[in-house]
Image 1: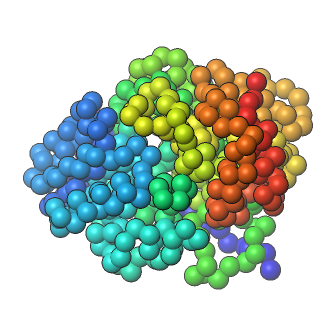
Image 2: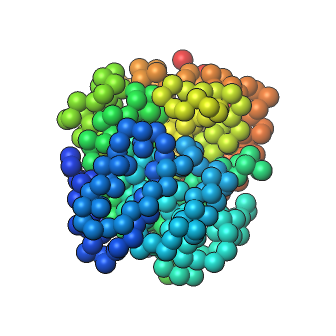
Length: 421
């Protein structure tokens, strides 16, 4: 039998300039008294974390700050944050102020200060044991300071497992934040390089969820078998389409301007929020599966706008690097959707066929200064098999692709992504 049911869930949302200054009131209505604020050194340096902490303290809340979040978290960095929280607690709630790295770190903390075991017990199989939480997590408020990851809306915590050189994660509905607070004033100050990479994450969230396997094309599930990523569906489609339209008007301007004008910052924040509300339920597929090994096996690439103390391929950039070829591959599974997505993103996109969306994406990537394919971040033909091996491990994501994906298919996509123009 085919599936007849799709699911939809989202955090409570507070959106708008100045929204981050209202958190103290929200947390007191939950009965919170002691709060752990999770952030990273860069966000702390520009004062966003201190501003949020001050607002919490103004409402009588005791705030302890953890400001050592690692950009692109690792199993070691998450364990460090959890150990800090266990030593300094107990806490009544966790507030994450930062990009996806801070929010994902806070998710791990909220899980492991209330549940037994260690990180590897909860990491997705086959890397970890995929244990489900036994007890409720600490309430989590996510305050994104970048426009892109969508972590404020999702049930996923992503990290690199250093010993295996693989990017994986924890996936469970309990990880979804209770409240997402999206304040465009915070993201307006992100560097252009971060805007470009994170913005491509918005774009791929919207495109991948919009082109994901239709929910009714899956086999029927029992209630206890339902997963957060249920496939494209009528509600997620609305969020994805609107996100693409907003990006069409704001993305290039956001990168060019450096410090974003208020109206541009608001449009980018809205696009990120809408895309998160879509893909957080429909799911993502091939570009995200490929992104995990691309980021996890980086050698010496150091992008502008990010900490330069170690190599990194930012998540949104890693996702984008194989996206044109991935959508060329999936085109025949849903031609109308691929063409509509291209024209939402660029109303002037002309023609038909599998090249339209890849061409639209490559043009945008070039305009915003992204690397011209995998070769520019240090990979070559000799790395294809290794990257494929990493992507194949992401079966949770590949299952959402609109057509079956073999290792040979992935090798073709990755091999053709060494350059795009």
